[in-house]
Length: 128
Image (cartoon, rainbow, N blue to C red; front, side, top):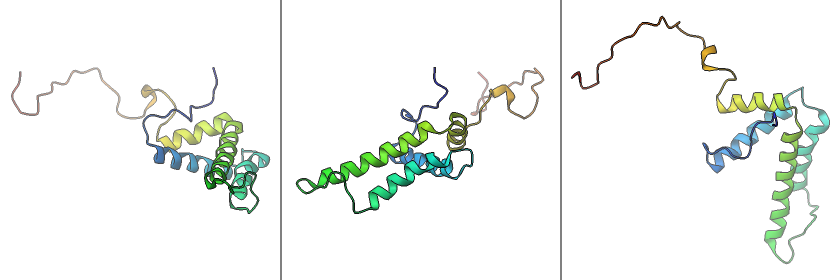
């Protein structure tokens, strides 16, 4: 089993939220010193390719093809970048962005449970 977090099948968020989450993750990984400088060149080179006038598949016949190859280069560059980054660093930022903490619920700080049973009444005020 892989230690890498599942970055593709997150059903809790919509497409735009997932896209923004991926963008934030990539920016944080680029800023992190634990990620190799050579790896950081992947998303940067993909972004440079999109804005450069050089195009591998010029969209002369079909303009959609020109946009598709740009999208493919961005997708490939960013996906490869995240998958090649150290898994623990990716997991750390993914959990931070998701608002989750690693660990078990029993590790959470707070009041100690005394084992005492506290009676609770229904909201409408009438006991059943």
